[in-house]
Image (cartoon, rainbow, N blue to C red):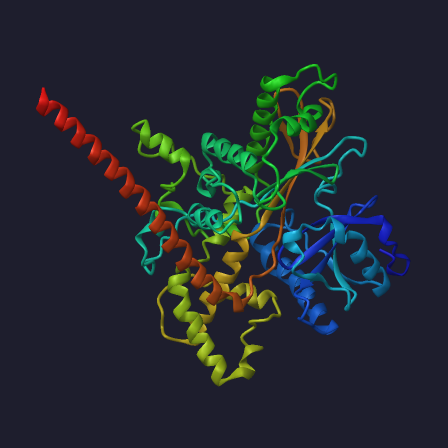
Length: 491
């Protein structure tokens, strides 16, 4: 990239989260990622450079080690002309969702991260004349806490995502509760995975997006977004899954195309790539916790049919979902068990503030930092070292719980050589594919108190709403029985 010849007109808005904003180049397969801050918060250029460099180092030295180099793309920090950044900021402002405009793009430092555009450019070289479809999934946490430190019995039965849905709908974040449950996707059971993916397609929220040649064609920007239109999505997908003459149409065609997409994504998610070092973790899920979430509509439907649990399958150990789940399970104690350890570290830092650098709380995220994460002991010896290890493991686990999986698909000819790239079959064609992971910034140390409060808020709200519904159902049943008794008495 020639930083001296940057033209804002060659770049377009690509998307943003809570802490960063991404723009994509119109021709080249690269994106720039800028940090965002509230209007009143100012950071020095040196601090912003170090922040971005820490993201690169954490991806390279920690997440790449856990997940494997084929899945993780670290990028590099670049310095851009300030005038280019300012003009770019003005150009894209109108495209930003209103709900994200409470923070401004950093236009003062000139620093950004340059990364491959994973909606278009992949690990393996695709034929340029073929279109590329990319599905971005944010799977969230795939296990139910198994820690004995958990005090809320509900947390041993219902997953965090399903509980949080109720609070998000109550606060207006989303209009309706999603049927998606992460435990279904992480089950390795194809029937459950299909149900999970269809649920995401029905209620995408911010957990699913679909891109076609780098352009967003499907996904929810905020609570005000229109209801998902499967027929419109099917129109985009038909060239990938049906003959190019496009004669098929109507509801049957729409269902068939969606079903084909779900099957292909499931196959890709169950595929294996490079080994990585996550295999050495061996954390579970095994007998540690339940494999099903009581709130999952899939589990409830089985229960209504008189079946207790779905068929046990499990994820192949080489697939990305398995590796991601292992990293998530570095959260050995749950936030309830971790919070007292966080307070122990805090008390130590209050007494010895100069030790913050030695403890590597703000980096550097190097090989030494990675090695300390491999201590899985849960016997608390009362030391700051033990507390710090658990805190750092929790931060890495939270990162894995919030990452995004990018699946890129490109049609390939039946006679094309596939020895250089993985291929997944569909009913009518084959797709070359690659899988990557995004959003691998280490979660901030300072966010732990917020997580502790949020966890309590989610569980308490869910317990109250579920209990209220159960009580209402029981009350109705009692009245029905009472009426029935009266009728029998009269007879």
